[in-house]
Image (tube, rainbow, N blue to C red; front, side):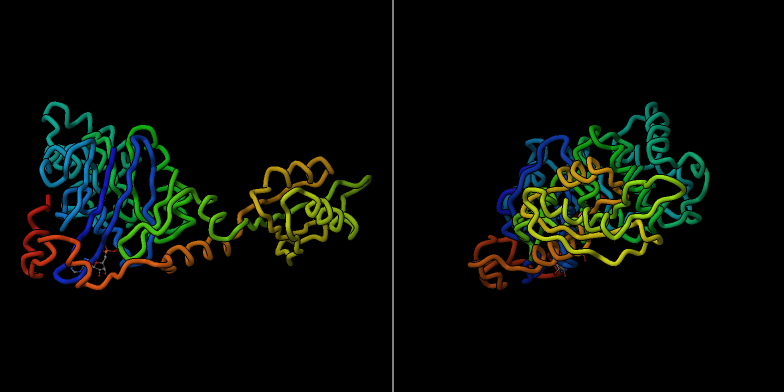
Length: 360
Ligand SMILES: Nc1ncnc2c1ncn2[C@@H]1O[C@H](COP(=O)(O)OP(=O)(O)OP(=O)(O)O)[C@@H](O)[C@H]1O
């Protein structure tokens, strides 16, 4: 669906991305993960034909974004990092406008708008002016305008950014509901957010792909193992109520130590009230969650929570996003200019004009 090879983008003298190469299969949900300034927005803007590349090739459905921008745009729904919403318009009128702009026939527009409103659960605010909506609802309008023409590919720049915890959960559910209908590329700078929604993560660092894979693959590669935190409750005793005797907590830890692949077990201080609840962290050379749970359940120990450690996720991301690969190429402007071709020599003013050219 997407083929990017040796892509470079320069802003004046400054290299923003390159050399960048990756491909995405139809139906995949792929996350671009990187720190601020890593090059996510630039990559997505080029994919969405909102910005021209300086060098390299980007194919969407076999079509080159430079040679066939109109055909590519008709296949893409794009949520920019700051969606251009018209505040004074109602949600419905704006979506109608967006549908017509993307080539939907007048006769089909109403049905498409109704569908987009339903998918994004905006029916209740369809008649409201966009200016009256919360940030979370505005993001949903941003998604609705991106899907209104039923594009095969969705390009979403930080769809979760700035949302509160409830809105994050709702946005994740919305993104998951789009699975199967579109191929999706989205960006984020938070690993735990992106790993919830995406099949595959591309880590972008200084405009290049630093690593790629699932969250598990990335953490296994970088941390040489996994860290899991478990909270358990001991087996019910006869009579009124139950308590896990000290011996039961020790038993849970002992059982965990015996699971194949486990390298260490450490008891944590639990925030749950009651002496029958015990939390512990397990380190292992592989993903032992299923085996661990089976062992504990068999011993009558109730599992209250199992999670990959947040610390682990943060640590994976920091390593991925900030570590330079050994022998990485010189990324100085001069070295980049030499390899990126003619466009890289453009002055910033020309670059600015070029950017405008791509805007829809
Ligand atoms: N219009 C521009 N003119 C000049 N430099 C730019 C422009 N847009 C981006 N850059 C630079 O290009 C690099 C990549 O920026 P980009 O916005 O693509 O990164 P990002 O990963 O999306 O970051 P963020 O998460 O902060 O949006 C950064 O160094 C940025 O300063």
